[in-house]
Length: 464
Ligand code: FAD
Image (tube, rainbow, N blue to C red; front, top):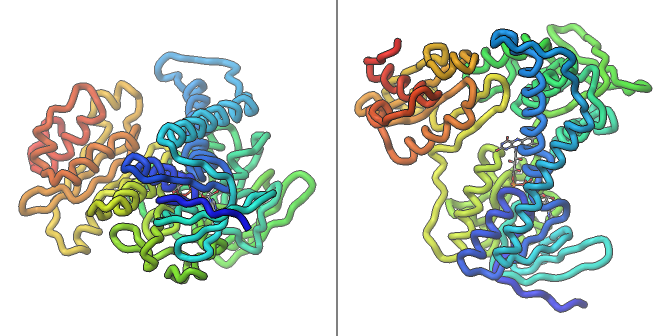
C-alpha cells in the first residue's frame, strides 16, 4: 500500500469551477491539491467557451472582410486558411491553459494528473496509467463538469461530432447538419456558416434558443437566414448513415420523413453531469435522477466534508456560475458565512446579433407576482450603433412598478455580451431605473442604449 498524502482541501476537476476553488481556498490559507484527469482548464478552456469564441471571431472577421461595401471597402479574393484558423484557436487555448497552470503554481496548489475516485468521506484514490495514490482530505470540492449527451441513433464517430469534435475539425465542412438548436449548436452552426459551410439546424422544439425571448431570437434567426442557414423546427432526428465521405441524416417533420446529406453532423442535445464514475453514491452523496448533486447554499452536499459546484449541480451550465460557486465553497470551507445568491446570473449567446440576459424577463417577473414596468430602446436610434453599421437589436429593462427597482434585463445586439455586465451590477446593487437613467454614460457608446431604455421605462426618453 501507498502512504496517503494529507491535504486540507482536495479539488477534483480543473475547469472554471475547480481551478477557481483551488486558488481561492489557497488564498484563504488552505493546503490545496487539485486533481485533473485530462487537461487543466476543463471543458471551458479546452473544448468549450474559449475555443468556440476563437472560431466565432475568425468567422466574423472573415465575413466583415468580405462584406463591408457599405463603408466603401471592397476586398477581393478574401481567403480562409482553415488550418491556420485552427492554429489561432489552439494558440488562444494554450495561452489560457498555461495561464491557469501558472496561477495554480503561484498560489502553491499541488497539481496531480489522474482520475479521482471516492473511497470514503475523507479519502480519494487517484489513478493514472501507471500508479495509484491515496489522498486524505478534510474537505473535498467536486467540480467534474459535464459531457455531451450521446444518443444511441447518433453514436459519435469521425463524422458524427460532439461539440468537441466540431471544434477540432481539420477541414472546413462543405455541408454541416446541426442537431439541436440550443446555444452551443446555434453558436457553432453560425460560426461555420460564417467560415463558409452550408448549415442546416434541426431542432425538436418549436423554436431554436429556448430560454431567450422570441423578440430576441427572431433577430438571430433573421441573421442566420441571411447567412444561408436553414432552420428546421418541430423536427425529430431519426438516425444517421455514414457514407464514404459524408453522412445522410434522416429526420421527421410534419409527419414526413426527410433526408439530408452532409459532410458532418454535429449533435448538441444537452450535457450530462460527470457524477457516475466517481464513487459518490458509495460515500452516500445524494443526487437527483439526472445525476445532479444536491447541495445547500454553501455548495455542501449531505456529506459534510464534500462540496459540489459547477455543471454537476442544478442551475445553468455556465462557466461563470461554476466560478461563482467555487468562491462560495472555498470560503465556506475556510469558515466564512458565504452563501450563494442566484439573483443575477447572466446568460449570453454569441451569435449575430449577440443575446444576453440577466435577472428576470418581463413574463418571469409577472409570473413571480410583480407589478412590472418595462422599457425598450433600439440600437437603430443610437449614434454609435449607426456608426458601427450595426443597428439590429435593443436593450430591454424590467423593473418593479412601485419604485423602479431593476429586476432584469435583456439585450440583443452588437456587444450585448459586454453590455449585460452593467445590468448585473445594477441588480446586485439594488438600483432603480432612475439610477441607470441618471448615470452619465459616455457618448457615443452602446451603453447609452441602456440609459435610454431606463428613460423609456420612466416615460421620458430624449431620443425616441
Ligand atoms: P468543466 O469545465 O467541465 O471541468 C471539469 C473537469 O473535471 C474536466 O477537466 C474533467 O477532465 C475533470 N474530471 C472529471 N472527472 C474527473 C475525475 N474523476 N478525476 C479528475 N478529474 C476529473 N459557458 C459559458 O459560460 N460561456 C460560454 O460561452 C460557453 N460556451 C461553451 C461552448 C461549448 C462548445 C461547450 C461544450 C460549453 C460551453 N460553456 C460555456 C459551458 C462551460 O464550458 C461549462 O459550464 C463549464 O466548463 C463548467 O465548468 P466546471 O468547472 O463545472 O466543469
